[in-house]
Amino acid sequence: MKSIKKITIALFAILPLVLSSLTANLQVKAEEEYTIGLAISTTNNPFFVDLQEGVEEAAKEMGATVKIVDAQDDATTQLNGLDDLITQGVDILLINPVDSDAIVPAIKNANEAKIPVITIDRNAAEGEVVSLVASNNLDGGKMAAEFIIEKIGKGAKVIQLEGVLGASATNERGEGFEEGAKDQLELIASQSANFNRSEGLTVMENLLQAHPDVQAVFAQNDEMALGAIEAIKAAGLEEEILVIGFDGNDDGLEAVKEGELAATIAQQPKEMGHLAVEAAINHLKGEKVEESIASPLELVIKDTLEEK
Image 1 (cartoon, rainbow, N blue to C red):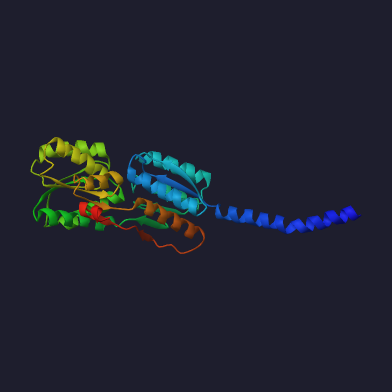
Image 2 (cartoon, rainbow, N blue to C red):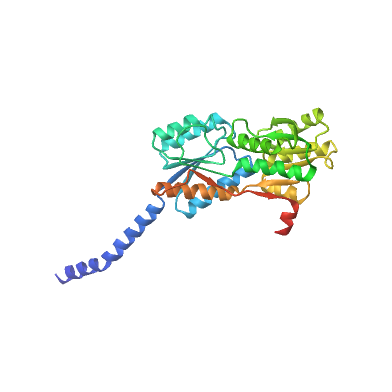
């Protein structure tokens, strides 16, 4: 009997510790219970690599897990990847659309499955979206036009390299630039190079043949700007043509520092990823999330970098 009493006393003694341990484990699980599905447009672009890293970093900090599908800039591949994430039953989707129109069926599928959606950098044309986390692309486009006017003057002949046709970032940056350029700059050509460096090179080579008198180039991202610079250098026109990009990725900032790229409208993709995850977790917890969350922009020139 004494031994039974001792065992009973011992069990009661350790019971609080066991309960405490179980409670702690439940708390950990509660913090890690959210699974975020991330559909990224491409990991071939440094900007979106940084965006993905921002999402992963924030999710780790907040105790969530992330499942990622990479569309490689193909809208059909993105739809298939999102179908997989929906089937897996993720708690929320973060979508960086390849194409704002083509993504609509996936958004509607998620809506039917009661999986909330947050879009990043680019919006969806239709469907129910909790929030869009993005830079103000309209303002960024205007900033680019204003910079060219300031550096070259009114009436300057300008070429625009557009991003992926149909993407909201392409539409908005173009709209902002053209609004800023109206009656101030002469837009002599505007052509898509799909946010891609090698296409930026090829498209710029062809445009230089048709428009050798161009004075400035606005590329809707740094990758296209860097490709355009290679074409301009090959033509021996680097002293004649000013190039401005958009994004502020590492290569773009280095080109600004070296004086090859006149300026870039710098986004903060990692911060964008952090903001998207924060919005996702807040929504899942039942907190109010703004329909539009702005990520900051900055015009970066060589002097800016030298001051830092």
